[in-house]
Image 1 (cartoon, rainbow, N blue to C red):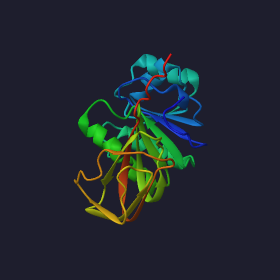
Image 2 (cartoon, rainbow, N blue to C red):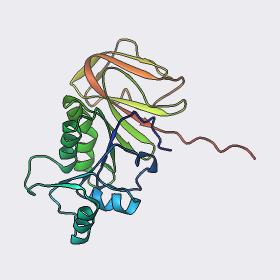
Image 3 (cartoon, rainbow, N blue to C red):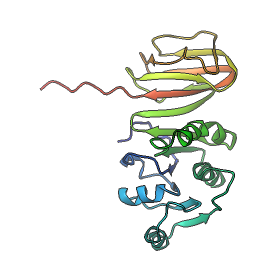
Length: 222
């Protein structure tokens, strides 16, 4: 099972980062591969519905496979204004999906990691609730009130995406915020802990990134 509570119907965006693809996401209604994500999808036994990118990571064998499985293919110039992952978000939005998970968006170049971590903000402007998933880590955007995909014991960190985000209230966290403020670059919101479910965050003015890190459960005694 995936380390998230899946929200149906959803799309999965497969990027070219590191690590295995979570098997629980294979049932996505729409699988969009962002260039290098094609190889990862094939290794995992996934069949992409759509492929976008400049194809700098696709060898002829992968292209032949995409043709064989009937994937829609959209090729862009190398010198383009959007990353392959952002192009994939555009596809998800155009196909009418309101929930999507970005898989494999972390683990390589730091600049691409940062771009993917900020992508939920762009996606929200397109009408898509995009959540970045990497192992036990999940990143989601907070505008207004949002219930966190977290269980008791998980770590949660909050980061402001504005110079100042104000009117922050939280529930179910060890260190609560009541009408609090987070500023861009501040570490005040780092490493909180979920103590009750559902945990939630609300911001009156501004927007936040919420980063949930799943704490491994202790093995049961024999």
